[in-house]
Amino acid sequence: MNINTILFDLDGTLINTNDLIIESFLHTLNHYYPNQYTREDVLAFIGPPLRDTFEAIDPERVDEMIETYRAFNHAHHDALVKEYETVYDTVQTLHEQGFKLGIVTTKIRHTVNMGLKLTKLDSFFECIITLDDVEHAKPHPEPIEKALACLQAKPEETLMVGDNHHDILAGKHAGTKTAGVAWTIKGREHLAKYEPDFMLEKMSDLLSILGVTGVEKN
Image 1: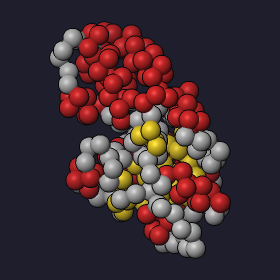
Image 2 (image 1 turned 30 degrees about the vertical axis):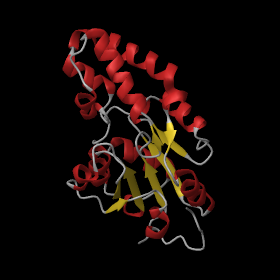
Image 3 (image 1 turned 45 degrees about the horizontal axis):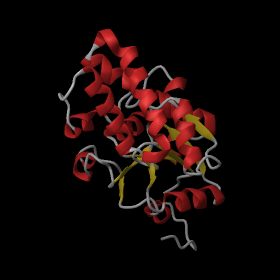
């Protein structure tokens, strides 16, 4: 397989922000709608842009709710964000092996930078496409197409890695190969329905898929 470019989603793929996102949604929704939403209820909100989620809930107070969410999210970011096993070593190895690496996320740039700095992944990516950079978020192909242009990469030589069906569909729409991550909070069965080309049990599975040899990573 002739892949030279890897695009990653951020939340739930490279860094474990699930608890942070869930707590941010629950804090916000309990503020406006006390005791109406549970942890299970907000799982569906993980992935799409905040504006889409809050517009569906309360079109009149979208900006206010986003502001409430982000204030909590940023204040608790470093305490609640965790690393996934093998991510750092795998990304470092791909970078050292000369792969073009990018991030395509529905987060705003400020929060993306916080997560990358915290996990020390910030030096490995040549291109980061955030919600601030596009008119249409995933699953629309625009974010991936912008990353491909940024990296001077061809879709047929690119793999999009993500934890959400938005990532898989965006990759398919843009013409890339796709990989789902089995550690998705929505469950691997949910992601498998969208037929990614690969399913990763841990991030280091990428190395064997890409034919990177001679590197031992736990």
